[in-house]
Length: 224
Image (cartoon, rainbow, N blue to C red; front, side):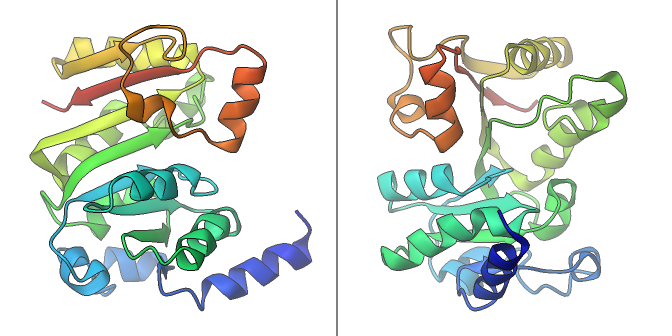
């Protein structure tokens, strides 16, 4: 994407009512004004809130919001030029249960109040295979503890990935730390019984993986 196009998208994001772009200080100092009040101030309803972390173009966020109009969905990504597409689609389709936040995922506990979130989706994250990158792995111990803070006690986390490494690493960690694995599948498109919600929404890159016969894996779990 050219820099001109990126700039255009950044500027357009500023005009979108469903996009929030706080700076780091606003998040850390809790001056954003939404923490604990996302239902009242942002969505103006009392429906459950579901996050998609590392939402990319926002395809999954929008796809889930279409399927579940009685839930609120927020996509989070640091790359606003990417989720511009999802934000624009939601506006064009008159969807009021979709929002996007441009920020770092490690700041989620500063953006949401304890127990404010019902579900979290992590879709096709970078597996960060190199050892020195493990601190950025979105299902490592530190990230799970962040998620635990903002999730309701009944909250569920979904991991959908094309990385067998990420799938195996996460399953091992979940079992090792005593978390509750509700469902795990190493190839959702070739095994009967996979939840429909996992196979009915496909991102642009997921379609490419499937064309190459790359297995798509899925885990649904609760953090102990």
